[in-house]
Amino acid sequence: DVVPGVRPALLYARLQAVSQKFRRYNRVRRRRQGRKHFPCASLLTPNLMEAEHLTGIAIDGIAPAREAARCIVEKGCRAALVKGGHLDGDVAVDVLFADGELREYSSRRVVSVNTHGTGCTLSSAVASFLALGLPLAEAVGCAKNYLHSALVAGANVAVGGGHGPVNHLFNPNKLKTI
Image (cartoon, rainbow, N blue to C red; front, side, top):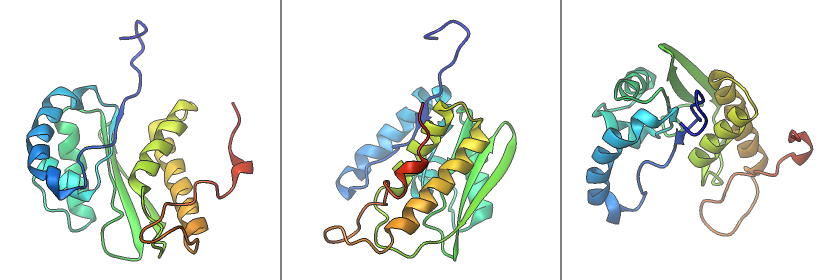
């Protein structure tokens, strides 16, 4: 405890490196992470591949994503948000398991090559809304809306070659001042 009686929120977002080169190293590291860090985490935010590695559950739809979110919480963290952006379909569904309750957050899929950093954006937005004092379920909903708006605003923006970033500056006038 940093402050007696207060447990700070700890979001655990980056679970594995994307590079193939680090795949073997990450298997060992993930086992250690689960034992050491997950009990400290307020929220774990794995993408589908990370959730599959953590749970051993093949996630090819919403039902297995729900099961994986429950399984991750059983490993010791307080809540899990399984990000479903890589599932097939016209709707992107993320699954939150917290306080014994499942919640789903859906948004229309945005067709764009500017999707780099969506998972980190979602996790950072959740952390930001939690810092503003929102309860977890509401913070996740606001973060999902923020990400969807940023994807829509950046869908047709040309940024270099390949996958570009989402448009974080889609409407700076709506940012809340502290």
